[in-house]
Image 1 (cartoon, one colour):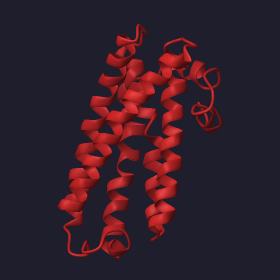
Image 2: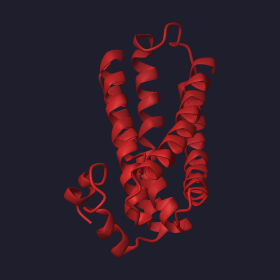
Image 3: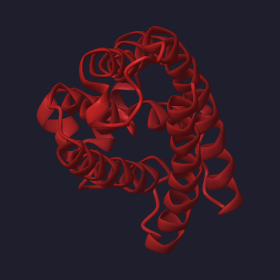
Image 4: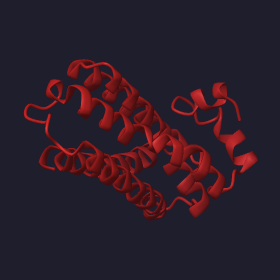
Length: 186
């Protein structure tokens, strides 16, 4: 699978998803080459931004233990990944769609890629820039889940796919909000 195919995942049910199903990557390989390296970006960038210009984002944050925060953030990301794969499968099944654990965890691994990459925006010390970049990444992640549900569950039920996205993203936003609160309170 190439970058062109990956770039189509948030926008199409018929492009990229069939190829992904065909190659059926092993979950250990997906974890080792996608989830683990990309999930290291946000904690690393959080540490960098927090250590260098945290006051731009949060007043009174200069003295925080950014190394500890980054480690806890990474561990929370791993727990969130595990929970999201399970949640995707449960919500799909409750909507009478079939998705196996492999595909649910594959979707849970691919969906946060835009969010992980958006953490590179922390190289720019601007709250407005990072907020805009995060919103764009969230939109792309929603698109990946929406089209991933339709593509991997082989359904064109827009309302059902939308309901699944709403539930999964809602839980994801709650987890994200808890992570932000953890960063502010640490």
